[in-house]
Image 1 (cartoon, helix red, strand yellow):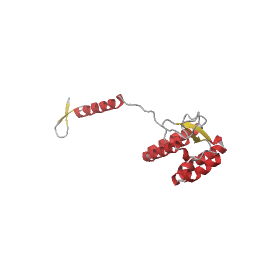
Image 2 (tube, one colour; image 1 turned 90 degrees about the vertical axis):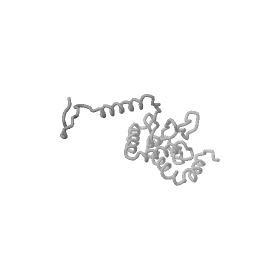
Image 3 (tube, one colour; image 1 turned 45 degrees about the vertical axis):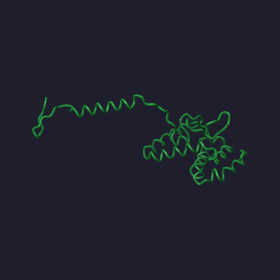
Image 4 (cartoon, one colour; image 1 turned 180 degrees about the vertical axis):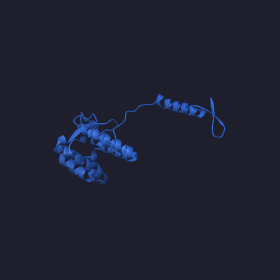
Length: 176
């Protein structure tokens, strides 16, 4: 059934050819995009790498929920900053010389930290059972040391360059 518009031209009721073709193209693109996708498990984002991810034994569930929410909020507001934080956190947890204050606080109060393992991060802890693992804070003293290590001492070069060797000597770690 055709109708007349205000100019006297005929038009068909219902979907036009262009609308139908557009819908078909969209459906084809959607089905092709999901048909043979390789699924890679996601890695933890910056806050979860630094302060704890879900599934970490001994870590407060409220803290992991906060970390997941903080990562989601940072991604939503500024994905570039979230990527930069995640890259910095991954590098920090991979590098053993960047944790002088963490190691000092862990030696004084081991309950300040729990051990976490994240796929794709080698971790800085070594030992028979700790290979690839790293420490995440579990109380305010742990959070203070981790924050100072990653956000103050590492960017200024004080952690690996100056404080690291001194603290390693105090803790009895081998020095090179």
